[in-house]
Length: 191
Length: 191
DNA sequence: GGGCACATGTAAGCTGTTACATGATTAA
DNA sequence: TTAATCATGTAACAGCTTACATGTGCCC
Image (tube, rainbow over all chains, first blue to last red; front, side, top):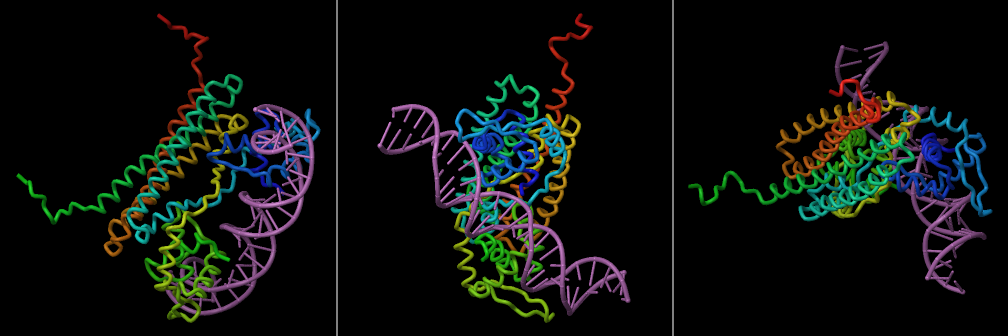
C-alpha cells in the first residue's frame, strides 16, 4: 500500500548505503529535506512491502531489536525503473502567500512581518545549504552521485536566494505604496 | 468540516466580488494558481458551512440552478481574523528533484531531460505571469488590493526566473562532469 | 537510575483529489 | 442537435501525519 515515490526515496537512499528504517527517515529529512519528506507511517509499511517483493533485505544487526536494510540487485533494477517514471505532482500550497495576497485585510505592518518571516526562513535555509554543500564537496566516496546531489542542492540555493531578493523588493514595493511621495504634490526644493 | 485556509481562500476571493462556487474554483485556479489550489470537493462543503455560519449569503441568480455567493459583514470580520492566523505549512514535495537526486541511476541524458522540462515549465509560468501582471496593472478598480497582488505575483516571477537560471547552470555543471577534460590526461598540443 | 537517542510498528484521523451523477445554458 | 461550458453536489479513496505503545542501549 506504499506509493511509488516513497519506494523511490527508500530504494534510492539504500542505494547509497544500508541503514535502518529510523536512519532512513533521518537521512531523508536531513538530506532531501528541502524537496522531499517521508514519515514513519510510510517508511515502515513500505519497507515491509519492499522486503516481501525482494527489493530490500533485512540484515539483523548487533542489537536484536533493530535491523539494517540493504537494497538487493532486483531492488536496484526496480530503482532504475522507478527513477524513470514521472512522479505525479500535487498542487503546492504556500500559506504565507495566500495571506499576503489578501494583505488589504491585514494591513501594512503585518504584511511586512510575513515578508520578513519568509526572508529569514530563506536565510536560514541558505546557511544549511552551505553546510550540506561543504559535506558533499568533501565526500570522496560518492563521486558518481555528487554531481546530481550538487545539482538538486543548487536548486535549493537558487530558490532561497531568489526568496531573499524577492523579500527585499517586496518590502520596497509596499513601503513605496504606503508612504507615497505623490507626483501631484511637489517637494519644496525644486531648484 | 472545512479547513481554515480553505475558508480564507473563499472569503478572500468573495471579498473581491461575489461569484458562484464554480467561478470561485476557476478564480482560485487562475489567479492563486501558482501558490494555492482548491477543488470542488472542498469548495462546496465549505460554502455550505460558511453560509450556515452567516459568513456568506447565497443570492439566487437569474438561472434557478445556480447561486451567487457574497461575503457578509460578519464574514469580513471573519476574514480579517483568518488572514492573521498563520497557516500550518505541510512539507512540500518536488518529484523531479527527487528523481534528479538519484540521477546516477538515470543517466546523463535523462537527467538533462528532467532539467530541461523544469526549465520549460518555468518559462511557461513566466509568460503566464506577464499576462496576469498586465491585467493587474490595467485594473483601476482594485487599487487597494493591487500592491498585494503584485507582491505575490512577483514572488512567482522571482521563483520562475531562478528556476530558469538554475536549469542553465545545472545543465552546464552536468555537461562539464560528463565530458571531463581530465587533468591526468593531457591533450596533445601543449606547446 | 534517569534521561535521551535509537528503533519498530500501528491506528486513528485529517486533508484533499478524483470520479461520478445530474442537469441547465449557450454557441456552432 | 450536439458539443462545450457552466453549475452543484457527493462518495470513495489515496496519501500522509500524528500520536501512541513499546522497548533497547548508552551515557552521565
